[in-house]
Image (cartoon, rainbow, N blue to C red):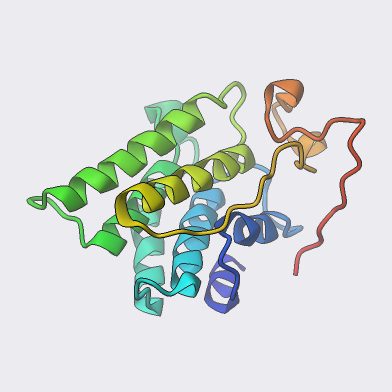
Amino acid sequence: MIEEVVSKTTLKDPLEIAERMMSHPKLPMLGCQHAYIAAGALLSALRNEGSRKITESDLKEVFKRTERQAMGGYCGLTGVCGIVPAIGSCFSILLGSRCGKDLEQRITMEAARRVMEVIEKLTGPSCCKAYVRASLPVAVDVLKEKLGISLPVKDLSATCLFDKSHPHGCRENRCPYYKKEDILQESKPFT
């Protein structure tokens, strides 16, 4: 499903792309699928924005790199959420970053660090959907600041519809995406 959405979407907002994938009824509440969603949403939004050439091969490569580092439970075992290397992989592919490169590697590491920082602030208990929602705007900010690439990003505060599905208990009012009782929200079905 993730690969299908990523290859077919024409949207330029990575959060909107991610939300569509996260609303799929068979997607688990928690899991490394969210790292693939974050990477796929960011790269496909960049492809659709058009200022940089992103190919189908690039999309396959980001999933291959993500698979090597996003493993179930590693967030708790190693302190690194799979979304961090997934976003780092996006920047690495976009910039051609590798060992021995200077600015390309620095920007890639800065993007990963900033994503890690925003995720760290949302822990207790972990919520992969919140991590995706927080990570993509950070990645978009880095794209704008370092590369002059502008992607639209929808404000998703107080929009989560998954609070009852969290197996470890939702953070509720401690989460910026928690749907407050006094705010009416529309559910967006998977399309």
